[in-house]
Amino acid sequence: MVGAGLSGAVIGRKLAEAGHRVTIIDRRSHIGGNCHTERDPETGVLVHVYGPHIFHTDDAGVWDYVNGFETFLPYINRVKTTSQGQVFSLPINLHTINQFYGRTLRPDEAREFIESQADTSISDPQTFEEQALRFVGPDLYKAFFKGYTEKQWGCSPRELPASILKRLPVRFDYNDNYFFHRFQGMPENGYTQMIARILDHSGIDVHLDVRFDPLRAPDYDHVFYSGPLDGYFDYALGRLGYRTLDFERFNYQGDYQGCAVMNFGDREVPFTRITEHKHFAPWEQHDGSVCYREFSRAAGENDIPYYPIRLVEEKEMLAAYVRRADQAEGVTFVGRLGTYRYLDMDVTIREALDTADTYLNHCAAGTAM
Ligand code: UDP
Image (cartoon, protein in one colour):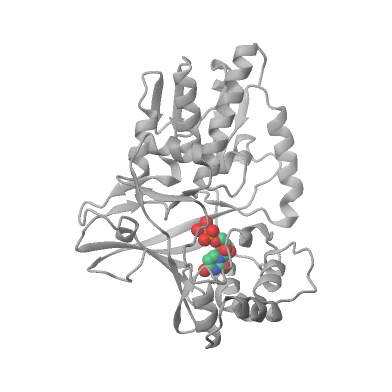
């Protein structure tokens, strides 16, 4: 197993429970991948070291799974955004619309009003920009999405797929829950504790600070690889684009911004958002506070890859890598980096559970995966 993040831990656990001996290596000095959480020694605040992770899902099986390893406490993500000198509520909801346009519209009126702003000539939006113009119109697009997205992705929203914006709902009521899933919560003592418990099985050995050496792959019955897809093939077909994040971390005495996530829609503000980590654990009390200013940029060779960009024009290179991955014997590519997809944690866990099942079925049938 290459990678001790969610994919590696979940697959490893299932295989170990079925009697396999599992070796997990990770090049970092901690488990948990980008979900890693740790307490700040000065304030005691639980910090999402690689940026905010909020657990939400519609998949009851996945929800039961994570709750089997860690207590999840209620947490609803309510995001604010600062744009053009005002603070608004996200995702775009009736409060946002009424505040933005200085109106007192009711739900049906707002729906009709936004439809009148939207570009209805776009019947099948392909790009991020088309999706925005079709569903919220140019004013809201410019205030909340255009500048933010240029900062986040380093390119024009015309080059990005519509799927990125489809992650966000538009609501015509006052529901300001950022997500629309049935289940949402935060692990009481962080993701790293949860993943440590998943890994805590006599059939699993974890080795940190170890790099993957493809030449050693034949030593194992099978390799599950959750590192970058292009990295596995030594970038032979070129480099797939990733965004990386820089965090400017600062401590504050008191409450810095009154919420966990404050986005900044204006292009002139160089960071995309500020996260204040103690608000991710509202059941804890801390006088001190830990905040992150988050900057996004293109990942260089030695940077941690966070977001697969999936530019429309990159499709061919990706398809070629996926073909190679499908043909590679004895290795299965998993997770956000291994499959180069913008996966949320719940989908990552679902896919990991299913991948482990498929592997075990192959083992039972004596066929190769
Ligand atoms: N987005 C935006 N403005 C915002 C929040 C999000 O334009 O205030 C866009 C941006 O392109 C982002 C995408 O919507 O990448 C998806 O947002 P999400 O909050 O899901 O991003 P994540 O938390 O995964 O970075």
